[in-house]
Image 1 (cartoon, rainbow, N blue to C red):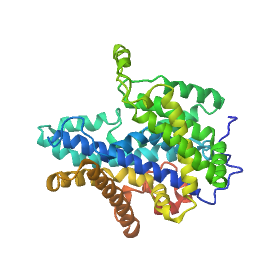
Image 2 (cartoon, rainbow, N blue to C red; image 1 turned 120 degrees about the vertical axis):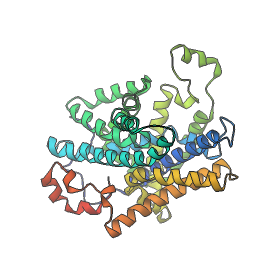
Image 3 (cartoon, one colour; image 1 turned 180 degrees about the vertical axis):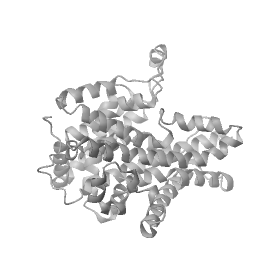
Image 4 (cartoon, one colour; image 1 turned 30 degrees about the vertical axis):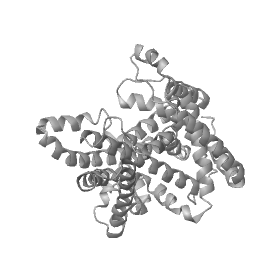
Length: 384
């Protein structure tokens, strides 16, 4: 496949790329922020603390981040694929499919064990709960949909690797523009996100060149960030024109919440936002004070897997004992506790070696035994 992906024969794998970790850390913060904020607001309404539609000040930040939050995450996920896509199918499937499904199944079981308590209280029986669990293999469940989607994209990209990258990227862009809303998350999210994942893979070399430019031209990169921030803010915080709502409802589509969700506009903002995150994180990587982002980025999947439980528990505690806290501040507290708790859980596992199967795939779950032995040091590494 003649593309601009990373070449395993020329790429230096000896050092971890700092701006990539910063970008992953930046994105995982915004992902947890979204779930924390929307969860607090929904819970507040369901418990009768606020009227429907009431939001906190954190909601503005979540809305601002909507165009770039997941596009950049998927782009980074595809960035290094060129280094491994030519591996044998056994090794490729082991590292890019079995690896992620192991953590999906494990943490799906954890979440279901926790949620089952509430479902039993609502009158659901074991058969109903098992039915929900089984359906989660068809319809990606809750916060875990990202690691469900990645193996699908890895396999499809491998199958399409003989087709010219421009054709695949163009078709993927058309899928994002469509937009496609079937109600099946696997189809809908693939259509909306694959263009960014494939762009990360096929355009890896220009992306690294962009990061290099931003490192050498911090002033210009920050100027771009300023312009982008204004445009992104205007698009996300401008409500969709009510006069056009009938056009969407007539086709059975949900009315967009803002201008940023319009076809073509969402693709443009997703692309511009991915560029902005690269520029921002490249500049941030020059400052030690932002080092916590690099740590979070190098453990982003750990945070992604583990934040759910502390998020729910913290939210319940706050509503029970401190319901007077405003929604925005409550969301910030939930975000902070969720991230810090996830890090503590990983460090506890890393230091003690206890329960490490929650974050490190055990040898029995590897298909490629030869690769297991070659990567014995992987036992000290988190899920990604």
